[in-house]
Image (cartoon, rainbow, N blue to C red; front, side, top):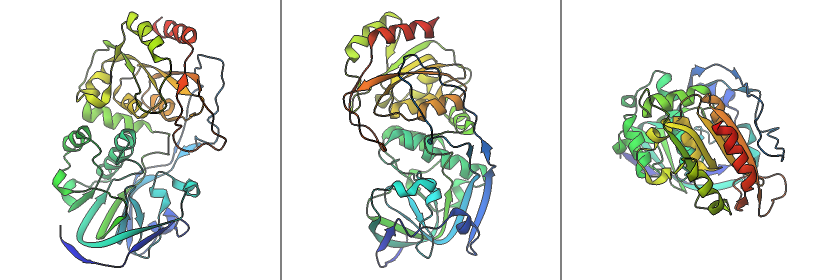
Length: 360
């Protein structure tokens, strides 16, 4: 890697930000539009128990215009890939937070900054270095916007990109991204490039567009696939289903297989073959993007963790989505931000009834 000398530290400051429109109109930048503003249409939720949920305020009425921004002498910093222009102003609309950047829990962060000759594509996104769903949907979605703008991997010297797992590395290689070109994001490190290319966030946080699902299906699954599987996706970390042992026999009697995506390399093919997918809210459900239209989805959602990720992804993929809310062991006060740490309980009678409706 052709480093120039290390220069003074880069201080990220939440308050020192610049709107995307202003960054786009700067003399030393160029904007490549890929997607027009798109109105979001989400159907009524199919709820299979009595507890009501409300996604009010989480789903906007439209997706913003999306594209790719070229910047001169700009910097990308840290494990979340935040972009700062040559004057040191953060462009939050290129991050997961978008216009909601005041939700950041800190205001200042110091980074060791190095200048690098050449050009770099940044497809890093918030939490994509450790969270599979952010990698699959946000990082790879950014790469598709880059391609749709008419660029190829040969147009850059480096790719600022996380590789959170062996499976992630396989997906990058399938897209033609050489691992040798990748710079791994690290906490406290930032890089300034002569030319930095940054795609938009691919959608809106927790809400996914149809083109994103079509891209992932086309790249990573074979067509046509027969729907021969009923999948149950367990969760083994925090936010588990506390009475899962009661539910597994019910599922197995109806022909469901317990499938753990994190330990399989054939995950896209398995989901493409799914007739029904059931699972607790978690990153593994990002694999719904590989399912075919018409696949039935039942999300088991903790009462302390009500978010529209897999509802919106299912709608984008033209799947039949439904959900059951289970009581969490504890409830955080509003406003709730980030993942809940609490396990939750699913009523087995409600669960059996929901299964009966899905299968019939």
